[in-house]
Amino acid sequence: MKLNTFKHIALATLFGLGLSSCEDFLDRPAEDTYNVDNFYANDDQCIQGVNPLYNSPWFDFSRDFFKVAEVLSGNYYWGSSPYLTFTVNGTDEDLINMSYSLWSVNAYANTIRERLATANASPETINTCIGECLTWKAMAYFYLVRIFGAVPIVHSNSADIAAGNYNEKYKVQIPDVYEYIIMTLEKAIELLPATNSEGRIDQYTAKGLLAKVYLTKSGYGMSGSRNEDDLRQAAAYAKDVIDNSGRHLLSNYSDIFRLANNTNEECLLSWHWSPSTEVWTCQNQMQSDLAIVGFDEFGDCWGGYNGPSVDLQDAFGENALSPTRYNGDARRKATMMMCGDVYEYFWQDKGGFNYIDFCFGYDGGPKQYQSATGANEVKHLYGNANDHLSALGVSASSQHSGLSTHLLRLADIYLIYAEAMIGNAGSTTDASAIDAFYQVRHRSVNTYERPSSITWEDVWKERRLELACEGDRWYDFVRLSYYDTQRAINELTNQRRDVYYGLDDLYEEYYNTGSFTVNPDEHRYNPDAVKPNVTASTFTLPFPTEDVVFNPHLMEDPIHIDVRSEFSY
Image 1 (cartoon, rainbow, N blue to C red):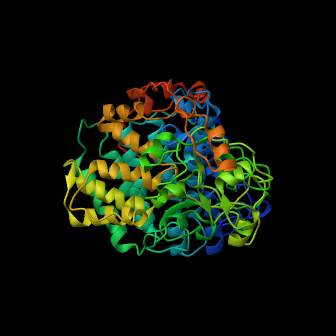
Image 2 (image 1 turned 90 degrees about the vertical axis):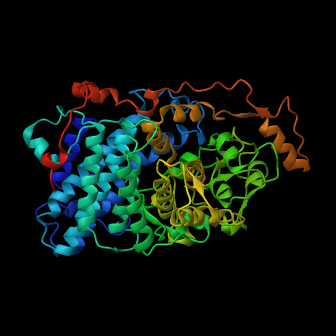
Image 3 (image 1 turned 30 degrees about the vertical axis):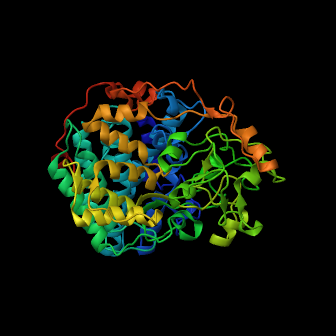
């Protein structure tokens, strides 16, 4: 936690939050008119004041959260990344940026909440906006505790600045951090309305997030089983969202991730980005990081040499050493491009996007096969400028798109409910739990018949397939490690996290001749792939080195705090 940076951010926000001022999800105040003397004077200004929390302070985290969640977890191959080999250290630039971004979110949320408390607006609007701040604050802390373990609690920027202790914060024990998150979400639920404007946080967003927090917390400090009361709480909050939120699963899985559905009803919590180029950090840049070279016309895509892992392909029942796709699960094609795939929703003005034709035949294409795994990313891509224009009425530009990033979906809540109902029993015949699981799986596997029982293993695998490449999988391993560390280690160690040999020649011949002839000596998974060194300490990443230099307390044992006595909203 770079508390020098925290001080800078906190002071900036106290005197006007002028770190960002672009048009984005709804409106935000103009930089030259936004200060504490003339803002928060009505309902509209309160809403505008909260809008930055839906994107800008999250930007640096969004650039790299994929590496933690998907590369560490074995869902995605990213070249020589230390996240692939479990060798991340405190000087890693991505880790530093993610850490500072999360603390920036907390600083924004704290300061905006304090200003809203004295706003000249309706009580309903003030409560709603504070509830949104608290939900984002809880989400930031939920990431922090699952990435770094014990972390400091910064409850009030202004109080810490006044006390002058911003470089003397102690880490707080993990159960206390979870209690702080729970307390924060409980207050958010109290303040938020049952429904809010499209795409914005409402009461059921906070309840769904709280269900996920309880499910995660349930295993901490346990051995082989989980806390029954936490599991009951997870189930209760999840069921409330399922039964009462009015939300439903979209009928077509891939529609969730399209530009036209940026604020679809299935998504409870999302980053909403602006394609504006006026100010950096308000835009979505993930297509640049993940798409094949040449995928759009801006020359800003460089992710083609990486790709969804061989292990994730195995989980979907697919094999890159074949031109024939199984396609038994609609989520596979919506998650990863493979040989034979054509996408009607990308490059609509050109009649669709043919994956292999693009690689070898398209004039602006790479003229080679890039991915070392036999797959490339689909989620987090919007397509070309025309696709963006058709959906949002404005073109994308270099490293700027308006595609929302969904962080918490209703399908996740269904699976949380099913897992919480299974609890420590290992399986369940409970009809409501089976129905929740069935709805998620049957949407994408239309041949799947409703089972008479489901197991923990069923839900564990289903979570991987349903949420693959959405920035979630590593945190499933973290919560598994809380109560069954060896199982988490064993699964990660035995994954196929490496590359195939000879795919470029194999696919080019197929493109040119229609012949797909696999030579086992040339076209094969790396026979010398080294199993990663995974230990119990793997599930907690180090603090940035500079943070520890500024605040040596971060190297000390965490302290216990009775958060409900120490803090209040």
